[in-house]
Structure formats: C-alpha cells, structure tokens
Image 1 (cartoon, rainbow, N blue to C red):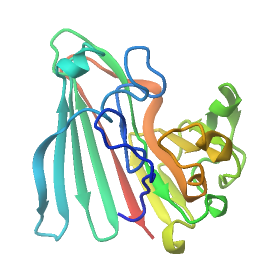
Image 2: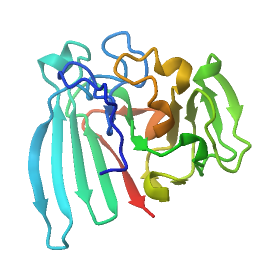
Image 3: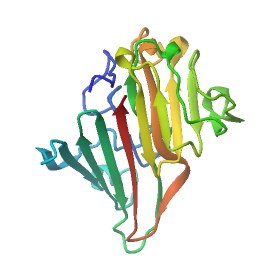
Image 4: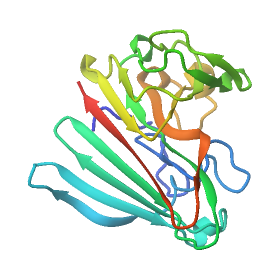
Length: 244
C-alpha cells in the first residue's frame, strides 16, 4: 500500500529489521538484554500458512505463523506460536494476531506491537486523534510521565512517546494525497508515536537524514502492561487500517 513508507536506506539482509512497512515487535518492546531491540519477530523467518487467496467477497487473505525454534530459544527459552492473519479490502487492511502458549508447565510474559511506518507529505501538517487525556511516557525526556492535554497530537520535534490506555480509534490527517487514515484497534491498549526528527535521523544508519518529514510511526500494541500467558492459554488482538 502506498500509505506505508520504507526508507531508501533500508537494509534487506535478513539480519536486521527493515526500516519501513509494519515491523512486528515481539516478545520485547525497546532495548532487550537477551536479544535485538524490539525482539526477534522482526528478523525471524515466518512460515506461510496460507498463500494470498482471493475470497468470494473479493478480499484477499493471507496467513503467516511463527513458532519457537533454535533461533528464538537462543534468546528466549519459551515455547510459543504466533499467528498473523491479513485481509486486504478495497480501502482497508485487517490484522488479526494471536499468540499461544503451548507449554504445559511454563507461564511467560511478553510485549507486542505493530510498528507501522506511515508515509506523509509533511509530518508537521498531520494531526493524530485519540490521545486526549491519556498518560504517556516521554522517552525524549528520560521516561518522564505526562498527561496529554491536546485534543489532537501534532509533531514538530523529536517524538518518542508511549501513550497508555488510548482510545480504540485514531485518525491521522494529511496522509498521502491529503487523505485521512483511520486506525481501529482491539485489545491493543497502548499507542506509540515516533519520529526521530533531524537531530536523531542522522544517527540511524538505515534511515536517510532528510526522510523524517515524510513519515510518522503510529504503533498499536500492548507494551505498558505485558501480556501474561499461562500454560495452554492464548491472547488475541487486531487492528484495522482504513483509508478515508
């Protein structure tokens, strides 16, 4: 979809996450003592459970999965199964996600987030709804906690915030061709907003110094309070992106 961006300097070597699209953050958000930042799901090889198939409705569906293997267990010794179901409609993209704990003995906790890179003509002209009144962790100010007082969030500087218990719906204005993007999320209580701005863009090797005005990450997930899965239990969440 042309509403997603990918850095011209993104690396496709299979060893690091692609700087663009919708990287899948699991089982850790942020720095991780046992593996790469934001976990291993962004760089692991997923299995295609169902090739893209046109449904009778005209929609296109594909299903992917990721299970523990030697690679994941070298960092995280738990059994798990992730299922990622995508449905593409004329003006919508649906994401249905499930994580299952098949162990009979061990409980695990994890974080999960869809690190979506939206393409925009000028991030300074974007407005993002759905955060008013929410508490947020400001990672640009050493993790200080504030309450969002604005009706709409705008971006005019380095931004890296974890908004907690956000509304179920966000609308981003002035995306590609002046359209709006609606984000609807279920069982994803948190929303991360990120833009590195000029001073930090130049510190990211796989991101162009001049690319920050044309992107914004608005990321649905569950990171503030981790998911806790007892043996034999599962967690499900979903997101819908709709062009308006």
